[in-house]
Amino acid sequence: MELYFATGNPHKLAEANSILSKFGVLLRHAPSPKIEIQSESLEEIARYAAEVAYRSLGSPLVVEDSGLFVESLNGFPGPYSSYVYKTIGCGGILRLLEGNANREARFECVVVYASGETLRSFVGIARGSIAEAPRGSGGFGFDPIFISDGCGGKTFSELGPSEKSAVSHRGRAFRALGEWLRSSGRAYA
Image (cartoon, rainbow, N blue to C red):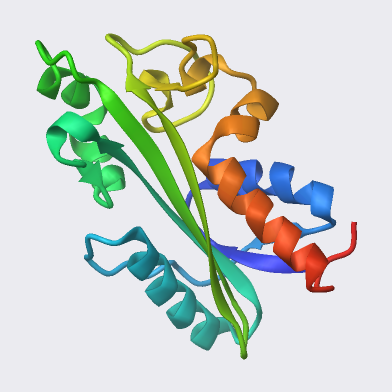
């Protein structure tokens, strides 16, 4: 099964394809841009983007939106993670947390599948904490500062791609999509 993926991030496309290949699904880059609204809800952002992209392409597709939610910063940057990463990066988040003992955080991901008759959301959450300094050379975005629970204190950037996908928010959301596609008879692995 082939689906379009409305994203401008080649890292997300590669990560999602690695996960969905086990379900017989291949994602192709959508020829139209992902339209994002401003909202406090990742799901609302992703659902709107999926509806607009589907109307534009007229073909089944997926949209993904994710964010880093830092507990002591009241969930910041949350749905604004992409903008915050571009403007202050990992270093800015670390400066905001200087002297703060509470470094709990979570990554959330919402994947939305859209077709003519279906608009369905799949959520993945990875709980963990923010490192004291960036570590590792893999991944992208805030991966160098996010330590996922159950990974022996390693950041997402210190994990290999398959290790990261096994515990990441994106891995969980895309596996849920793949399982649903297979169980509904849309994909065959």
